[in-house]
Image (cartoon, rainbow, N blue to C red; front, top):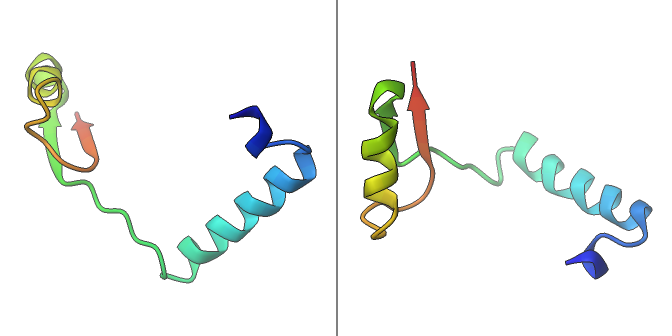
Amino acid sequence: MMHYIQPRSHMLDMAAELFGHVLAGRLVSEPQQEFALADAAQAHRAREPRKTMGSTVLVP
């Protein structure tokens, strides 16, 4: 992976491009499921056998 972020100026340019797309609304990432923080162990059990898709968020 190091060759993707070298030189540092290239990595910063790529990050600026990515976040520009996010801020412009062209890229959207919404959590697909939420678990209460108290249910963190259950969230891990669901992720291990790939029973979830996308982002999983723990909420207080």
